[in-house]
View 1 (cartoon, rainbow, N blue to C red):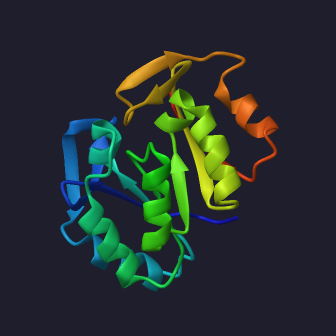
View 2: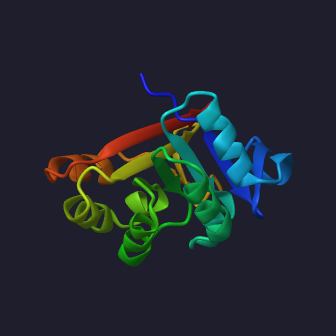
Length: 170
């Protein structure tokens, strides 16, 4: 089993949100690179980073903090939050991210996910967030009623190498 300690970034700081509410955050470290290094010292082999602002805005926002984390650690980093174009995926992989997580993009643009999985095998993960029978997108802000024949089966059938992350909040 691999445990991925998470660093959720909001306004350049490590935070936890109360029930996903961006207005109710607790800052637990002002220095994301120091937090990342602390996870490495604790013995973890991967880091999971989420750009919370990016998830809401639809484009990466906390680039500086992500770069600081990548430079501070020598373990693989996976990144999600606001990554919705092929160019953004390619950019982050070139910056040193080991795996890019696509959530909203997987729901809205499955063809992007299929192409990314083909172009970057083993470096793409699909993150599906669910709340009360809805698939949540845009940083848990928008909900779409679950559809039996949504984008998930289509992405799985394409023959691409892709990991799936499922997060459920009752």
